[in-house]
Image (cartoon, rainbow, N blue to C red; front, side, top):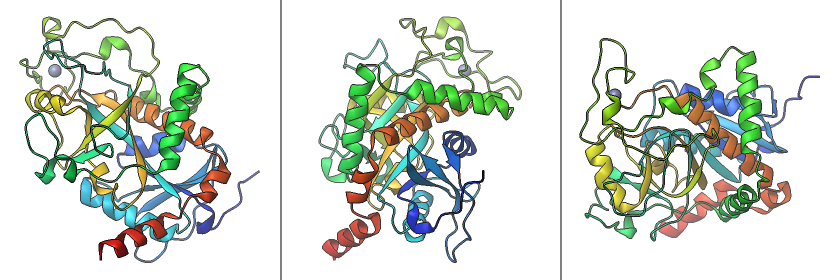
Length: 341
Ligand SMILES: [Zn+2]
């Protein structure tokens, strides 16, 4: 039986994706896909509609090739105008991780490819800092004036509940990854499969990537250059909570990455800073590379799928009644604007 077409006002969750693999990953996690709604004048986003765990979700994405902070702000502005009853947002996709290095004495998180980072308040910030705003720039210290808004309470509470579920093995992330991967296989999208731990290679910062013709893989990069780490055999993604660095520039420099790790940044991405102040949301990132010169796209589909599976599980622990009790995004944003004025 076909799913009936809903109205704009029946969608309460806004989900933003940018890269094609992020959009497809979100779509693979839908419980049901809904028929499209007619486009509204002035809205340049594209949408995929559906439901997850009883919530009606509008997945929005900007036009092809558009990325970065300003584009993310436009996407958010459009979605909250078109779907005027949205209560919160999820920004779900991939990011470059900041791995634990033996040379660094700070306590760092052992971030591996395919892991998930959730942007949560940390070090006096709301969970996301804009790296190229320049304002925060002080070695070893974040100017907390420059961070962006915190995620809404309903999402932080849900993330806390899910953290407990993970501990007690009640979380469903792996189940969602499995069912989405199965669906991807049926659709001949084999690239969403787990790429294998042998393809999770972290190189010492001083060894730059060696390119070989068109091949962007690390086939020419030596095993001797790899950082010796404890073996992780499980495919299960680890979930890390903390600070996300957002920037208009792609980070592919181990030197820059290693400088940033003193600030407690767990990963780098390119959209969150455009959203936090216009669209109350939680940022969920699957780690697809280590932000160095070896960065390639091999892990992107799986990392996008893992992040989407986390978001799907988050929606499982959020009760519809609590969503209805949450203020409409449009009203929150208008109130903030009038307070500023
Ligand atoms: Zn390489």
